[in-house]
Length: 66
Image (cartoon, rainbow, N blue to C red; front, side, top):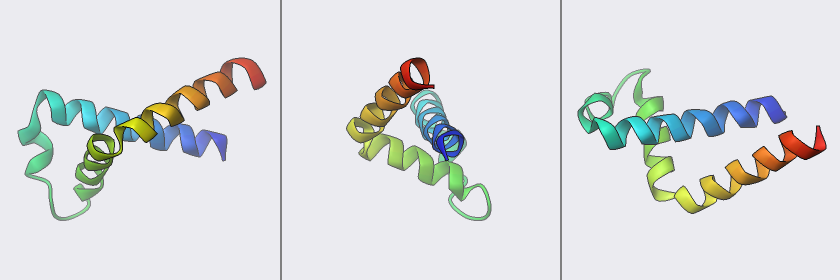
């Protein structure tokens, strides 16, 4: 479960960063299978404080608990 959450957090952060650098790459993929990356970018933009807190909690759990 921890690995799956880590993958989702990395996917959200990466998609938001790519959309910040080159929005046209993700904005043209609003249909089909690639819509997942566009939705992850939107989650990363609108819920960025929550994503940041989750990343910090995940980092501490990986560093100090595991």
